[in-house]
Image (cartoon, rainbow, N blue to C red; front, top):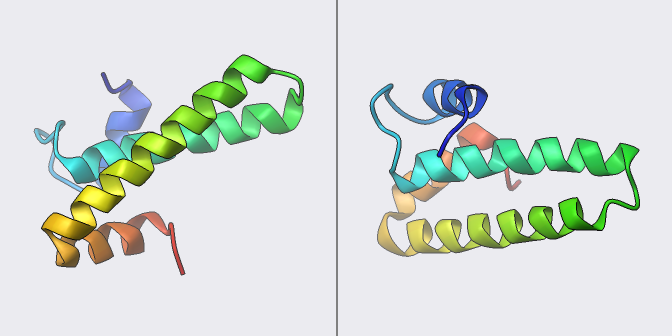
Length: 87
């Protein structure tokens, strides 16, 4: 499930308004969650359950990116560019 903020980010960065389940939208939503958790962990260093959630989200995003690279390399490059993930 995408929160309202994640939906806004996904709409502006990657896809159309009705698209909620495509790989690129899910990557965008996970990126938003990862950035939030990263900021939270900078303030709360000893929050180990949030750290575990961060690592799970990073792993899930990595799997989605791997799948997208294999199935549609052009879309993969587009998503990386829009989200600013890799150089």
